[in-house]
Length: 242
Image (cartoon, rainbow, N blue to C red; front, side):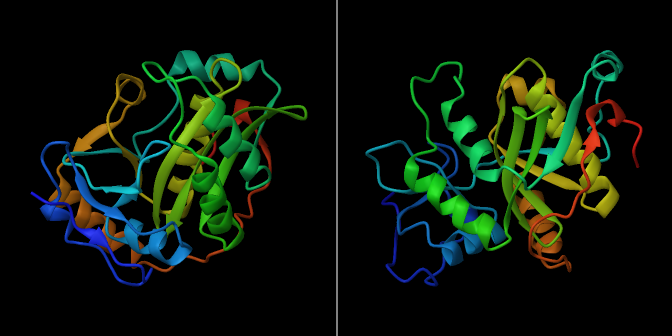
């Protein structure tokens, strides 16, 4: 099967994600650019870009999809206890670019490089400044020790990457994100493709038809764009806040 090539017009749309390849799983289209309008259109349809340096832009919609359900994503008792004695603070949208850089530099098992190229970092930075990409950060005093970033449309969050500067930093960021989203009535975090680490944190598989239907419902719900107005709070409060 020949892959569809995206048009130069960023408003040219995407192929139906149900027609994505089975091998490699979810590969849907090639080309185009990372214009904010194209990226937002992709996420609204359950599609995301993922490619290595030197490759053209590749667009994916795998089946099944890996997700976190925010009502089930809470810190285990042992991890919650470990947070009670630490001085970490949770913030949001105060260090987006630093989180992206840290995610790009974080070592990954089985990988020698990163897919977060300067082009990708710039594209998500633009989305952040437009109020559509967000980060949740974990600070120890003024040191960034963990974080997660992604794209929010309506009441759906599409996670892109997370990192730990010290052990547990990414977990704290993920649990904090889920806690915030529960309070806002956002039920789902897209985690894209399964790996053992995500599964260990509670990620679940969701068949693509069900995922696409849920995305269509959630992105259509009202939610204000712009920087997240979240008062900093101690990581020790994770699991105790609503």
